[in-house]
Length: 382
Image 1: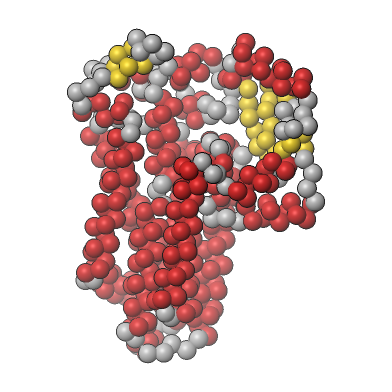
Image 2 (image 1 turned 180 degrees about the vertical axis):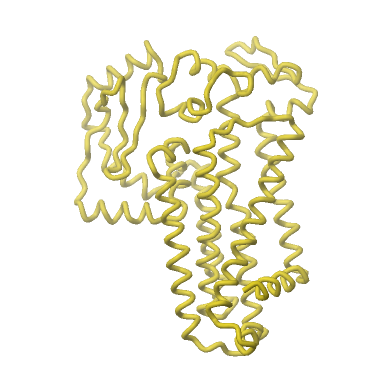
């Protein structure tokens, strides 16, 4: 397998088209990261000559000399409480400190960059795989490798490993660009390792799953055209998630099921009155939001007691199971939940990230198995 990987790398690096895509990837990644940072002037102010005004009447003036006082690194707030800001209880002083600083925005920028981590690599790899491996079928390279004694299984698995290495190289290149940006602007983003690490691993496996499916199509069909069509559909699905998220449409499938299961019309009026009283007199920091992945119910708790803000709607069990299966088998499931309004911390805490990770592993295994079985049985023409 080592010789095959070395051969793939040699062919890869001597291709003019590949270098064009590499440059395109570097430019696109740097641009997206820069745009993320540029939208938040509290990051770029350290290298600028402007001021920021905060508070209700703009009575607080922030410059590059005092901006650090309003960043997370100067707050006496735990990473866990910052990440659970919208869904966990926390001391009032920490809640106010987060509100009166840039901490929440810092967290959102970091999570947003991690969430986008798979997008550009996925698009580039979904173009590279049909072109690179499709060309190997077209110019009889695959047939020659078989004639030289390499088994079809070894050829397929080495191709899969090579595609994974491409994904990893691009993802870590993106991370490097982000680290350089942080160093340039002297910004220390708040990192709550349990959430960040699981998100990062999930992003890697999303790219692996998309690559596995695309590679399977190439080796099953042996045609670049068919693989490019499959790649286009997957690219559209990846981009569509973010068009839906930032276009405000969310995920239609999640939305339909959610509002069938969580009935907001036939609810206890007294519970809502208590909820509004708590918000007014104590604040959101005393409330805890939970989501049950098995029942698809979202619940709010106060001092360990559930506030009945929704009734349990009815859906036939078979229909409910089918809808939940469609949602939970989506390789981009967590991204769709975030499009619907879920915070990454809640997706992590309630197990949605673990489910997404598991179903991406499933798609990697099933697509690779199908691709390998069909490739071993089909005749390679040249």
